[in-house]
Image (cartoon, rainbow, N blue to C red; front, side, top):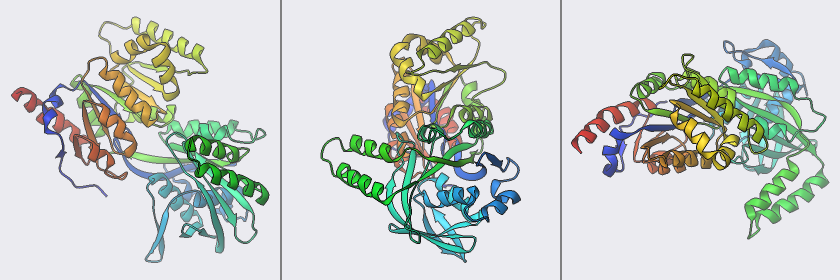
Length: 450
């Protein structure tokens, strides 16, 4: 449901700055998109289900396989029904779920639609109804999702068998590095790339069984770390890493998040006005690239410069920069181009190749930064500000607050992720498209009056 709200100005001292903005730096999820997640496709046991036209939960083969007890498909959707922080209520005989994360909500709903239904969820246990059979799972521990971890895990005990399992879902790079060495990932990696090229958000799902003795030993370490007076976060991270390893891969989810209305036109208007637009997102490279094409950040008319590499791939980074410099030098004077870069590349690019990277990035008409953390978003805004450029940052979630506060002008979208961003911003409203009248009408008039 759309939020019906007028624009709120929380800082009238900087209104004339709206007419001088040179760089707009925007979040993606909930800012350019609706933050309404639709479960579209999945990969289970190296088999892909669903398509852009037909959602996976309508696939007859998938529905048939889920109905088979202890099949790979049933295990996959059981994991999705247990590894989350959703609450559940019943309306007109149907389970309705709510969660701070729209992704979780979409995944639990999809599980319900294929026959693995969460029928009760509280702090002590979850109840599932799988093909008419009730399962009770005791909730032992929650290893929370954070922007640094980019994964979450739950440790659950089957009330009937007494067996303990860890279920995890998270970003593909974070889960893949925690799988058993014997697990083959070639096919699922191909499926992940296919989903990303369709502009879908992907999460990997994995699990493992833990013996009662091993769990008790680990739980003692977890308790000691959770009450530590010093270095608690570091100690907890070490304890989490100890248990989140040697996992079995269950599958991959692919969720669609549609663009907000008029985003494409709004970005085109910003570009036509000579304003450079940077999209800062946590999505993987191919997903961010596809979304960039959809919302007019990337065009087939203009070249796309890709900067790859990282702290462990400095040769790749050096090669990317050299190739970009050669390519840009071949352009006609004033030629327009776009750039895309990964979060792991930003740090070494800033530290070791600052001048070269800055020269390439600042001349690009549009830039996409993918796989970036909230800290990196603020760091990018700071980099642009240091070039004596007027910046505007726009976002919708609590993780966008550092970026919003770092920019000369901060704009918050009041959306599904709450009001943290809008309360921390100088201006707030309900949709990205309202940025155009804010800048082009009010900003223009305020600048003329000053």
